[in-house]
Image: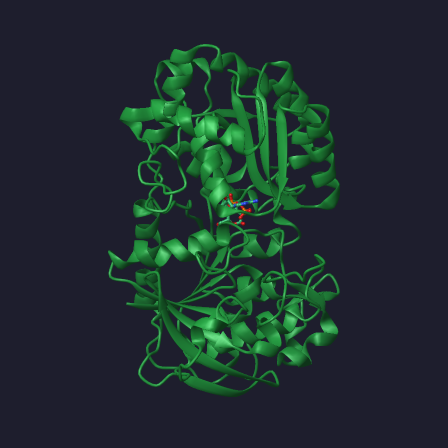
Length: 490
Ligand code: ADP
Ligand code: GLC
């Protein structure tokens, strides 16, 4: 079966978070299930040098007024279609923000064009290749199914929600510019509190919706987590399912990780020691005994990093140390830097994004803190488990179902893998930090937690099978004769 995945990020080429990890890992994981995925991505600056001296597969003269060329590229085992439109994608900054941290003003067009190209491919624009199923991810590519339905395509579409907080909300005056008819601006269309929402359009026109954990799939039906889309999601409940993310076990393997000074596995956990020493030195921290806590995260309200700034002193009071790697909201960055300033040699904050350092932290730290206010799945805690780095997490979304709290019952059943806290507020986090500090003082218990975490299986195997199952079911149900193009999908 051929699947077209349409995404704004893919590891290792372009990543701002877990979305890239998932879109990068799924193609490999699904190969064993008879599914061949080709992924459409924008031709960002980093990708353009790879297109040099290559002929495009296809030239689009006019995608919402923009010319673009489609290139095929095989890289790191990924089969890519790269949409080259330098006026849209080749510019400084990240995929969504410019060098000053502001959204690119034309994000609406950049991702509408990407989605339209996806729809054209789904409709057979490429001679000799047409997908059986299309898979879209988050608001950035949610319009793909809207365009496909406008074109009369009946090819099944799966939309995965990685984070409902980002919805692609823009002024309704842009509707003509994204090539959609006026009737798309309706309650049962893209209309969203007076604006338009790309994600809402996708939720209404995809054949199946997945969220990245079963808990999150339930949570988003409520007003608290639904971010205004709970009504739309509730209407589509029979077509919504949670599938927990897996991890790429080749990239995240402490036994072969090139970024660790001393690779280790279950049997050689003691080798974590030299990694910890190296990490402490790298961050200029004291090298005395005591637990080393860490956080690798976007520094945002979602991730509860303000709560970490508020409670970090608890770690130092208990004889621990803390390393934070991340970037995000200026206020939260500053709050963390201020606390670190109060604890020289005990706490270090690095503002930035660095894949290699992230690996080193997982390898050397004793614990990782993820106090998210909501967390669709979360991958950091899964990487940490594999590296014997014990997660301390809030009880929400994917965190609640991937980490087993070290309560007495779970400890004696040898099932615990970390610490959970609830409610998601600073006092409960403080309490969890104290529990972790206490557990660290009993080496036998701590080691057991580490080993149990390292044994937990979060490979893609089970989850990939669930995606394959959805694709196959949809394909079986899809009408074979193409419908007449409708005047509007709405
Ligand atoms: P989200 O996608 O919401 O940010 P996830 O836990 O799903 O959260 O994924 C985050 C991914 O980004 C992980 O691979 C994590 O290691 C990585 N990451 C986050 N911040 C940084 C950083 N500052 N440096 C390196 N990697 C980071
Ligand atoms: C989003 C979510 C995160 C999830 C990731 C990959 O960025 O915030 O929880 O793990 O997508 O699905």
